[in-house]
Length: 113
Length: 114
Image (tube, rainbow over all chains, first blue to last red; front, top):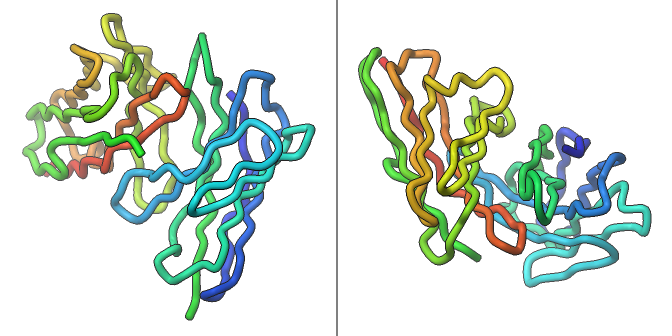
């Protein structure tokens, strides 16, 4: 299972763009990258998933360089309600151990007014 | 996104009793589900992989006789904490794996053992 490394914490202000980078140096060819958001006493919520290049949905963008050894979650114009812990997960898409992954420590994002 | 439910959301029990937690995928079938536990201000720790129709696979250090997992159908996995003790108090979270390879998580179950 690929190990991930993220900054422990980040601060931002309302309305700013926030970029959280995750390192996953030993990512395998069949692995994909998924980002989750977790509020206290709740299960993680799916944000975005990608394999390479750039993926965008209604809440975030995910940038993955060609070597795939890192990924960056971009949250446009954050609000106070985006204060949460953000996790990146690396997991296999198919076959043995599909979906199985190890959670890193996550990044605690604090958005200030 | 896909919906995964857990029941109960919180439970308080006496030491020595057993507690069952249900995890259901409400709008998709999941051959594989995962069970995690999370301590305050810590990350999620994978306990076991639940496979429909076969035995669960436990992570190192997790007692399979203590944490019984049954994946009876493609939409239901249960975790039973047997002979619970105060040190088993934690936040238990399940996830269900879609065919796309994405995990969707339940809301979690808070267990308090007195």
